[in-house]
Amino acid sequence: LVDPSTSPSDVVFTGESPLDPSITMFFRAVICALALGVATAFTAPTRSAWTMSTNDLYQGSVATQTAVPGYGGALSRGCMRETAESTILVQGGSLRTWSYRSPLVEQVQVVLSTEGRPLDADIELWHGPDNTPCKMRVYVENGQLRPFSAVIDTPRGPNTVAIRNIGQIEFPFAADVYANDVEDPSEECIASSATIQGGALRTYPFDTLVDSVEVLLKTDGRPLNARIELLQGPNNNKEVIELYTEDGFDRPFFCILETPGSGNVVRIVNTAPVEFPMTAAVVPHSINENMGAGAVLGGDVVLGGDMAW
Image (cartoon, rainbow, N blue to C red; front, side, top):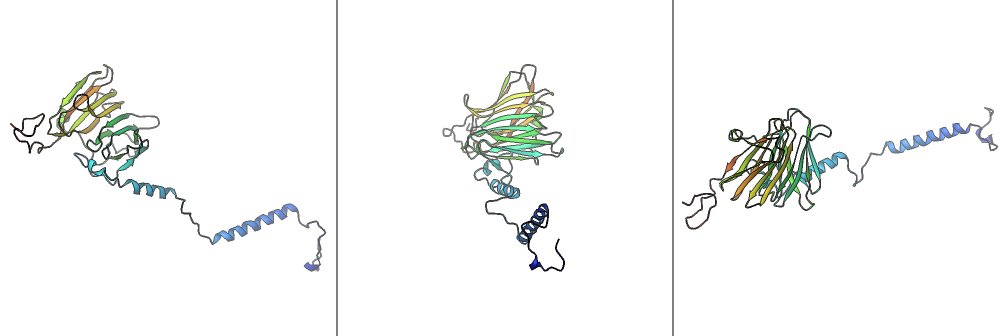
């Protein structure tokens, strides 16, 4: 102990600390912590130029996905609306999802297009973990001339629509999924349904005036397995859709096929066994009245019609 009357300069240590080593270590840690707090208290937090937050990444992806040059024209054909602001560019081999948590969303429309290149995609509807009640494989020879448009029923949300570009990286496509202003089948389409037994097929030829057709497939509650083909010429597939739905009554399939040119035939194949029949309806959706306006007798040849006679 040190005498209180002794000045600090007269105190001499003999090599042994008057305090306990653990206490000395504690005081040193406290002093270092205080010094570090004072040094950083008046320094504003900064981010380096290469560091981005999650919000920055989201805003950047939206900014790059809203403008999709070369795809807007295809989306405005026929029943398609102008969706340039909500269209997302899906690169080859990548996956994009659209989630709808509200049970009020009972239908969504999927629109896919390209700038003239082939389109090859997988579309799935996810309803709960490991549950895919609807899925389809879509191939289109020219996604600008024949954009893909289909309506997927999404009862009892939440639901997620997953679109995967299974083509190569050289074949991107534009995708849009929306729940407002969804196309519905016409009364003529609903009234003209015909039964197709399991393993059977039916063809529907169309005139040159028909620009697009409606396709409606459903069952009485059994699974739906079908193959939809758009042919132009002998065995020349312009568009192919391979479809599976676990309940064709609860989740019927409806799509609109673009049919430009002449010689278009829609072929519906029931790929399920004979125990699983389905009903199909294929009717014209839009008609081009000016298709044969320039036909001259002995001049232009018009296939599938007699407008020059």
